[in-house]
Image (cartoon, rainbow, N blue to C red; front, top):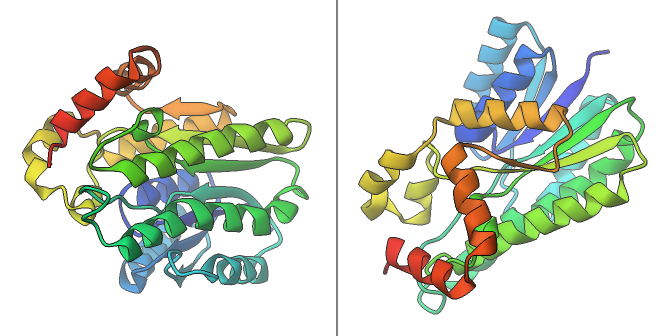
Length: 258
């Protein structure tokens, strides 16, 4: 039986490209996203191009309880799951008090709760493999507070901190945990976040999703704790760590001003 990887948010962007990178390495795939048509297209592409087996499930992980259902489905498909990619997530742009609270809670459900629940449900199976890997996708926003994207940045800070903590907890096991923090990437993130007004600016800094995915997968298999895609993004993230927080917040506020 082949090795399996589960990828959330697999229908497009970084998730799709990560699935392709894993298929190139001979992994069979379990693909999760909201769009069944896009999942079907990707599954057929992987099967025909890389001669792997792939299965897909259309599921909205921002729905409470969905992570448990996805885990049950995954366990019904294979006992050889050795890679978990927690990629699904989205952001919202706007002031905290103006954005609908239900939309913000939905974002936190996907960006935080689904990651925790899916990992908790699937970790026992991952521990039975010879080698296993978890890659949680955060953002360079994890390294700073971001006025006008307050909860998004906070959720990604949580993912980064959580990833490092459980990495330490699992250091004497077969499971390696890594966290990928992309910067601006050519995906549908900006449109869903409501950042269309900044599209021209973003295009100047966007990295291709395929490049980000390749960096992330390579870093995961090298068991790196933190993976920041792109030299400028590394400078930005580390700068946010050492420069005065008030300065970083002012820069961020001016960049994404309301």
